[in-house]
Image 1 (cartoon, rainbow, N blue to C red):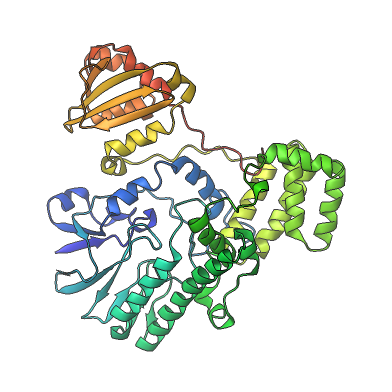
Image 2 (cartoon, one colour; image 1 turned 45 degrees about the vertical axis):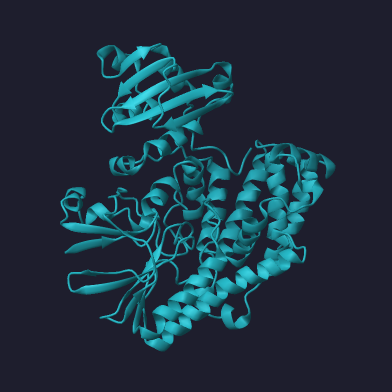
Length: 489
């Protein structure tokens, strides 16, 4: 028996599956695809609803548009840059549902530990008793990880992360001679494995507990981030250093997980957006020239964070101020070169690049056929719903019954009050139209820009009732522009 194991639901850990096997072999039972419970739902959903914004921000986190030079992108912080190859996905054929579950592949026995909500929403470690080896997925790394990626994601649970590492030590560490993981070098020897896992666990536990202690003492996220440091005994271990995640970023993530974005100060309850706020700051400080002078003083004093704040206001107050843009780009370049974290370096250098040259016009990331096949129809319609123009959806009210003939799915779509609602397994006899089509035709007309009228005229889409309603539904869904500005208004 052959098998592919997905350790967790991030694309760099499943996206190359068709490089080693095929969907046909998995369907025929020639190879098992093993994954943690919830894998498929998390793999196809994490980057769909907020996918356009995440993909734009990922350019900054991973330095995707930076040159691969000593002055540009040199690492993601966790390892080399992301693969630019084709992303693929084959649905799992075997799910791990609980810790202690075991299975044998060929002559090799595996014992699994389920760790949901840690580095990924669906993740697992496993132990190979015959080899006295433990695989720690991405729960134990060569660096401190992110509790909240700069690209955006749901905030991860530092307490759960630490608790699962405690469980890993108890279950596997003392019985292991080899530990390996999804990123980083293996470790050899029981003593070294126990030392690494316990000290890495203690870093996440300290981060969580002390962030919460300060939070409960009245500190806000930025205030916690400014003062929180690992104790020297943990900080001196290079695998706890902030090459990828940082104490500053992660402390704010712990605060956000418990408290959200609002820090309870009424002045911050309803602040001005960045552009009008910047214009008022510039006016209050005596105009752009005065702000540039203050920024120069800050830069000369080595206070780059304050210089960046001042120059950012100058740019947002007037994006045509080329002097402010160039000087802010220079500051970001210095901050990038001084950053220990690969992610921070990439973010600063990408900001500098876009201030100088503008945002690179990249096409939207397209899902491949395998990922589309694995994405449920409700998830796809959720993605359509968050692209609805509210004024158009408020201007009229209608209902459409849709039958996907190739999947035997029935969907009721209701438009009104500025929203589009979809209910599955529901049919309304009073709907204004009833359509029958295949799911590929649904995808092509909703997301790929193919006009529906020729398909209706040819009979590929069969309609009873008002045929114009499906076109009206499609018209609600706005195209995406994933090249929106970040460092300028």
